[in-house]
Length: 415
Image 1 (spheres, rainbow, N blue to C red):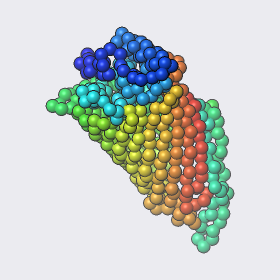
Image 2 (image 1 turned 90 degrees about the vertical axis):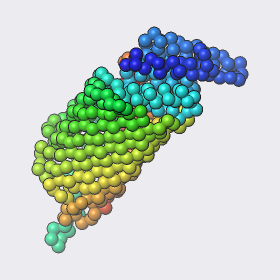
Image 3 (image 1 turned 45 degrees about the vertical axis):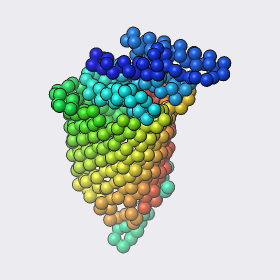
Image 4 (image 1 turned 30 degrees about the vertical axis):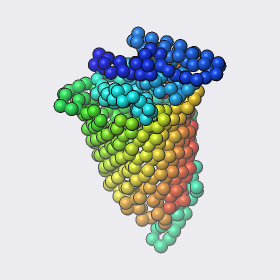
């Protein structure tokens, strides 16, 4: 991989002039000294990268961007460092971000080639995020009283909700192996297999929730387009008991431009087998389509529409949902990578249970804010983060309406 992109690195290395980059022009004496110190550290990062030590270069470039996130040349070299450290998603994100800056055309073309090389990568890579969080039912319902209709009578019932919570770990990760299987006229064909998992680990087994699955398929990578088709199987366990098994197909597409923008879409369809009750057997279909755009060479903003159709044996548990998601990422000073999300969705039940006295259809609002300290590395390549989430559900039945908040503090692998 390194040899095949060696020619692409030349114009990146000379971006900004011969030798060291022009990181500042007119400064006061104090600012000039700061610029000289930045340039010294930058050259040290380049030396580490040229010596084949990207893991040493990454903290140096991140520390410079923590001081001034607008230094595009430094961000380019950070993207290169992630590339050679085989941290593909990080490298891809940084390359996409810098495309929105004012780049010389040869550099812009090379960045696009790097993105294509990342999508056509081969070999093994893995991701891991571990967070400390309160696990269990943290929802605050509007009421615990539910009115049900039995013939001509309406009777109130008090719901016995399980509100137990416990401090535990949320562990999310994946391991993937990729291999080139064919080279078409304008596209590389990559075969891949992936193990993924999402585990809530707590001492109280009544609160445990885990999903583990396998994904395998083919990805086609052209100069401006990447699309894939894969088969997926996964299993969810609740309380250490088998809950649900799914099998199906996934398809995804991305079309990117030369200024840090892209159009993306995904579609998946599953057969669902519930291991506890046949009433929840059926099918589930998910879709999403959206656009994202880099801005200022230091951030990304996007919007997408999404939906789900769920059909099950017990018709009153089936529903159609659709919604909108706004998302972004911004690299601020002090090494803070800020990622906000805001979404609204509507869920319409296809055949509501006739004993309900109200309409269970619901509107759901969700907001989250994640802040990662991207210039601080712990345990050889993990960065700390904190994430806060808020959710509000307004149902036509008050007993199903609630708000919920969650806070996570954890570590995310960077390299």
